[in-house]
Image 1 (cartoon, rainbow, N blue to C red):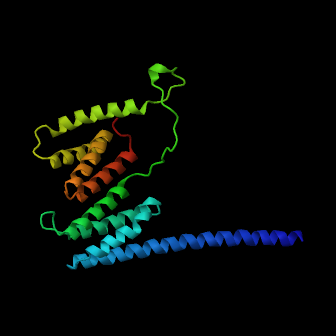
Image 2: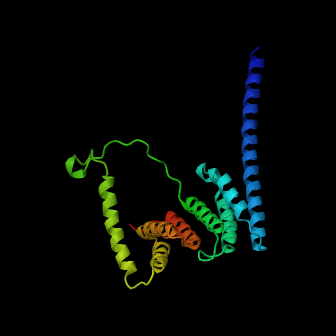
Image 3: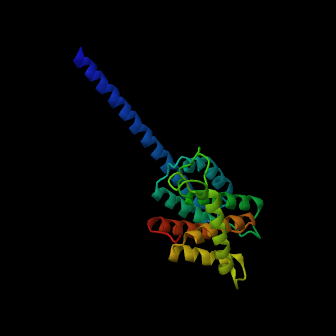
Length: 226
């Protein structure tokens, strides 16, 4: 009887393992199938076909991939390349139709979300205590003060970078260069804000999103400027 229970237990463990393997395989098949579909759309766009509706549907249906962090780095890179190919086939803001502009917006939002690093959300936090109001061993960082100081430094950085520039795009270009070459974290943050601001003005920001993503990756690999 004991041997029977042991075999039964092993059977249950094996079934559970195989079930998980099947689930993982099914998920990968779904992702690979979705990327193959996007590849087909990119090829169609390259041949001159209007695939705006299909691309919009593709992004809408697969946005949970980003929310659930189901994509590998190689998946994100491949998708980014295909979306870039499609974006380059869309007309500029001055000549595009509302449908084209909507698809451009959808693609940019996907790429911004894909470029954002994963964060562990703090859902509950105790009240902060200013360092000057508590003993050093019991005080915690004052995020309000820290963020205010960051805003001050970033404001100074913006004034210095924008001096003599003729357009905000030139400021953004310089900031992304600083973030990439100098690994300047504050330049990276300000560049992200400017990209969002420009996006609200219907500028095509896809090239800048790519550069932001590259700079963020470099910053994550080394020690950034503080």
